[in-house]
Image (cartoon, rainbow, N blue to C red; front, side, top):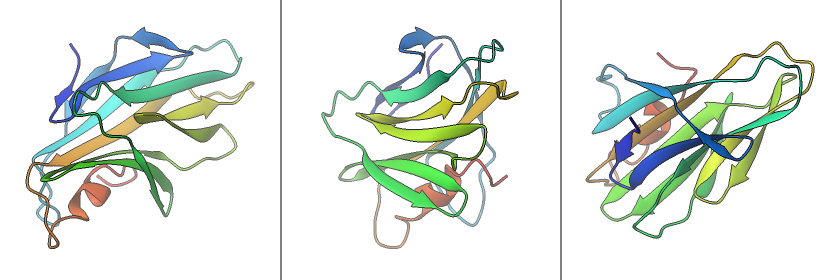
Amino acid sequence: MKLVTPFGRIVICVDGDPTEYAYQEKQPDPRWYVDGRYWIRVSVPGDGLCHTVACLVECPLGTNAEQDSGEGVEMVCFRQEPLKMEIGIFEANDDHGTEYVPNGIAYTVHSGTDTREMIFGVAWLCRVNRENEDHTWFACDPTLP
């Protein structure tokens, strides 16, 4: 079953092919209220080759992703007032790179790595305003609990 957000269904692709995935609703954090907060875990083939693992939004609202980033994390942001959603991934390192793609973001897993799972954080607000607009940024950061 695919995660459904206010911006559309989340599709995960490994090397361009849609794949099944597991997602988990995260506990609310009193520091940043959001309407939805999920972690998506995706298995990476263990063959030692390069792979691309992308998290895409089937976006019936027709909006494009804007790049966003922070310390230890890369993100894309979707906005269509009053909605806002962000998808976050771990910052590039020796095991993987990051790639911004239309309507999403992707890990590029390097050859020879031992990485077997990638995590995407997804968070959204249904009524964004000046006081809460950074809440999705923190809520989708996979480095935070």
